[in-house]
Image 1: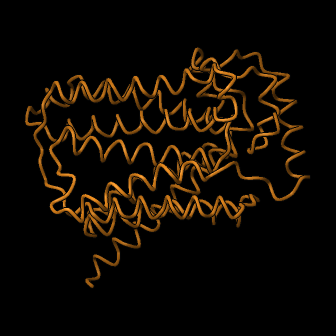
Image 2 (image 1 turned 30 degrees about the horizontal axis):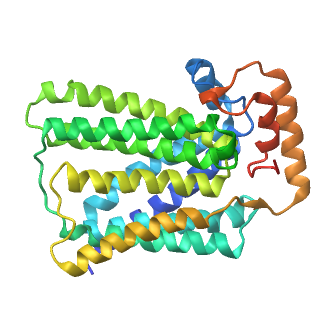
Length: 327
């Protein structure tokens, strides 16, 4: 194996680790600040970035994105994407080793299944073509449908029946909007209209979706469970990109029946995994009590309203320790 490929795979592994630890750092910071309120975007963003741990996590995510670019530039797409996608399992290892989470057997099974499913999707990426053309109406219809689904997931937070799944649903919304932003970038870079393409509607739509995803992701980490939310966000973004490649950009599902069956099975594994990753539980009750007490104090000083139509501010104290308290 060439040295450049080895370096690329190491970058891919570092990318997976950076993305996982970045998400955990962002969650650690998000639960220590006021609730994100989409009606007050500037105040919410300022509060998040005043949090040391959220800022560190955000910077780690930026570094992971740069490592992602380097990995795919040096290593074959199939190998690099497989390592990055399958690296979601690292979030469990890092959560237990450095963030005082205690995962149970079912959670490890869910992360393993998710890693296998995402890894298979990445490993079969070599079968995809390098099509760069797309239909404007097909792209617009796909992105609008995806955004609408993300909005529906976010609005479902109003439902009491779905209260226990609010963090996951909002994490899915964030992942979908991140995915739409990536699809818009693909559309811009695949175009042949020069500056007009860069300054066109796809760029602005992608930026708008990225901003919405930022707030949705931060809020999902505040009201949900770190492991499940990070897994849901990552899986939603990656799967949407793969589906868009097939439906919009002309990538084949597979060049042979075995690849097609494998990719469909991988999609099913990812969906199954998201039902197997329950809320992580803090290993030490004392740490949980300390964070909950801190969050209660912060919540009493904050006057922000209900974000995304979600639970009221009094409920933030019950979830601010990271894992959701009993409801």
